[in-house]
Length: 170
Image (cartoon, rainbow, N blue to C red):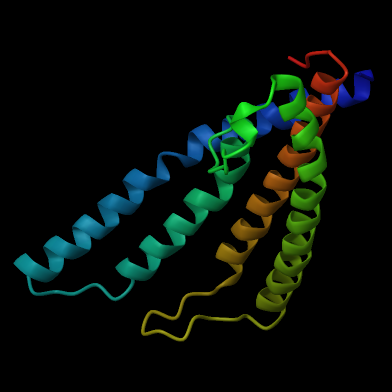
């Protein structure tokens, strides 16, 4: 495998590992916000209008920014009916074929995410709720998360291609 491909795989793996390990703590921030909102509403009779929406935004950031890391550690849900019976080399070959579909899908999502983010920034799009937050920050996070997943899918393709050829990429 060429040095450039190896360097690409190492760099993308490192970025997604760092982002994934940082983002995994967002779940605790989300729990804290929702717990605060629940206590505020039940004990002090002071409902918080922004809490549920902020929890949704944090959950979206959690799974979108963690998507590349999930791909990297192979923890996405997979249909194992036939796949699990294959040898590791045949699994890698199958993955190289399915990687094209994944890359196509993520590319379409990325194009839509960029378009949606540009629209939200240009027109200062807000959510139509009582809180009314600007939507461009969460749309930017969505686009970055999709881009990280796309980069990781390409890195996995390189790893699988090397595995089919009998090589390993560390």
